[in-house]
Image 1 (cartoon, rainbow, N blue to C red):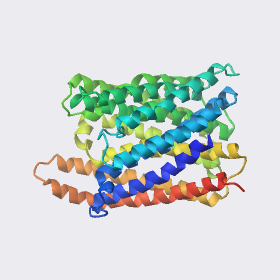
Image 2: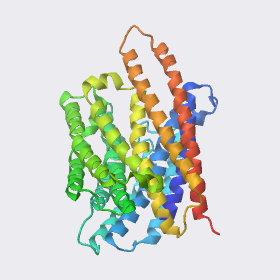
Image 3: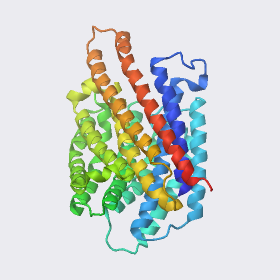
Image 4: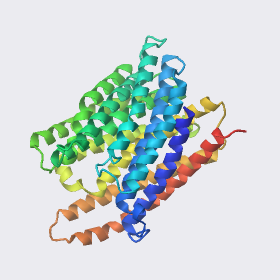
Length: 436
C-alpha cells in the first residue's frame, strides 16, 4: 500500500502547483501567457485530473484496502499485483496529464483524459473490486461493520460509473444535451459514489477507534448508507437547471438532492454523538482533528448542495464562482481532510515508526483548514454577488469581471496556504518512508 500513498502525496504536490497556476491566471492573465502548454484551458483540467485520479483516488484506494483487511481480519492478498497496479495507475495518470497539457483534452469536466488513456486506466479498478470481494467473502468475523458497507459500495459503483460515462461521452451519438447530461451524471457521482463512501468509511472507523468507544448508533449508520445509495445517483442533473433539458429530468435531480438531507442528518448525528464529551482529544490526535473537520465539512457541503439545487437559489449561483467554492468544499474540506487523517493513522502502522515532527503536522492542519475556509467563504460570497450582478442586464459583463478580481486574489492566497501545508505533509511523509 505504501506506493499508493507515496504516489498520492506526489500527485498532491503537482496538483497544488497546477492549481496555483490556474488561480493566478484568473487575476493576472499575462502570467506565463506565452507558454502554450500552460494556458488556463489546459492547466485547470490538468489540475483537476491530477487531484481526482492522482491524489484522491490513489489515497482512497490504499485506505479502502487497508480498512477492508483490517475489518475482515485477513492479510491482504495479491500484494504483488496491487503494488504493480500502483505504478501502472501512475503511468496512465501521467500520460493523461501530459495529453491534457498538450491540448488533447476531451473538454468534458472530470473526464478530460482522452479515450485511449481512460480505457486502460480503468483496469486497476477491476483488480481492487476483485480483492475487496475476495477478502470480504473470506472474512473471519460475522458482523459487518458500516465501513465495509461503504467500501464495498464504492468498489462496485465506481467501475460501472467510470465505464458507462466513458462510453457515453465517446459515442458519436452523445452530443450536445445528451453529453452534458452524461457529464453531470458522472461528475456528481464521482464525489457521491466514489469519494464520499471512502471518506465516510474512514470516518466511521477512525472516530470510534481513536476515541476508544463504539459508534453511537449502528442502525443510523445503515440508514445513512442505504439512503445515500438510493438518492445520490439521481442528483447530478440539478447542475443543469435552466438548460435545454426536459423539466422532469431536472426536477428528478432536485428531488434527489433534497432527499439527501436524510443520509446527511443521520451521519452528522452519529458522528456528533460519538464525539460529544470527548472533544479534548482533538488537541492531541492529528487523526481525529483532520477526520472531525472533514466530517463536519461533509454536513456543510451536503446541505449547501441540496439548497443550491433549488431553482430559486440556482438562478443566482449557477455558472458562478459559488459552484467552484462548493466543489472544493466537497473534494478538499470533506474528502481530502479525512484522507489526511487516515494517512496519519495508517502509515505509522505500515512502517512501524512514529511521525517525526508534531510541528509539521500542526502546519499541515492549520494551513489546510484556514486555507480552505478562506477559499470557500471568499468564493461563495463572490459567487452570490456575481450571480446577482449577471442577472441585471444593465450591468456590462466586463464590469462584473473586474469586481471579482479581489476575490480571485483571495483564492490565490488561500492556495498558497494550502500548498505550504501540502509541502509540510510531504516532508513528514518523506521522513516516514526514507531508509535509515
